[in-house]
Length: 488
Image (tube, rainbow, N blue to C red; front, side, top):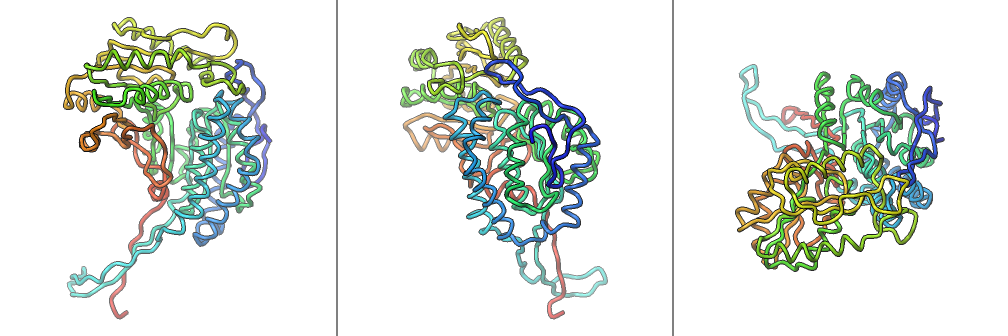
């Protein structure tokens, strides 16, 4: 039902449709609904009714877990069609779509249902406490802290990880007992509408999950509607600021997972072959469209040239092309507009004096689609725009440093604080440096990966709150203190 909205377990025809492009060809291949503010408000009303009047918030955690497991089983059974759609709509190579985008989402549903939710405690007793009451009487009270669902959640998800981030947000919200309205990026609506089919098959109560697609108009309704209690958004800093401001008028809780300009620190004693593989991988994965990617490579000046000499041939060997081709390692960017933006930043980097060591152009032989070569800048000063602004494209910058303190200072000299990498054979130094970095995640001698039990999120302009594991579920809970006199 790709041309309908999913509201209160029914497929509702939309008043307006928007074209969906295949980024590998630049051609429209389908249409998706473009929800109006009225249609978005209808979805909020359905979620509000399901929360206030329906059974979901009051169901036992094991019941919610069973529903999430059913959803995982449906996705597992139908994963091939979902992978095909990720490849076509997002432009990601099939192995990446299959393992990183779909498989991890299914596994996360199983993790929440089978491990995380059963281990959580939603009522915590407090020790008795003697204190004077407001009437001046000394009394001993006892009590509990109840953790209750926050209410209706608006879940706004990005194009670069439509399936896994929708599932992460939704599983956490549903595990907490919230109801939800999901709105994906207008670039990738079909993947999330297909998830709505799976939700319907998993047989959740009406209105517990509603899926609308569209652009700014629908999003503004979700962030300003008084029927929404919490907004969880993943995307750009500029939009994150707007959402925080819009949500503030009605004091909604916000969880924001925003951008990154993450540093990968390569010390002189590092395994440079392994580090080079990671630099190349962080350049080309998702065509560079990932907030977690380590796109500032900080390298000890003594091994700077050696590392660059190892990275460049790896980038040259990357096969760029049709994401449906098994031989393809990197597909296109999501749109012509995004490619134009990245190309403008590359030109700005050259104008500021950075050296283009590799790439920077559109690949030959790919006239259709939104392709761009993997690009590597050297001679970069951390004050340059290319070192401070997030590209969200296949571009990496190499910045030399002299000494550990300089590496930490450069790594922290950014508005962002999402992710970091450290490559060294000195494990004690790696841990000491990791503690000094102002970032939500640090990976030592390994590529970044999302542990389902770990918190996901950042410091500074990289966001507010956390996703992942029990930490992500906690964001969708409120805490209530209930007390009474001992002996009452």
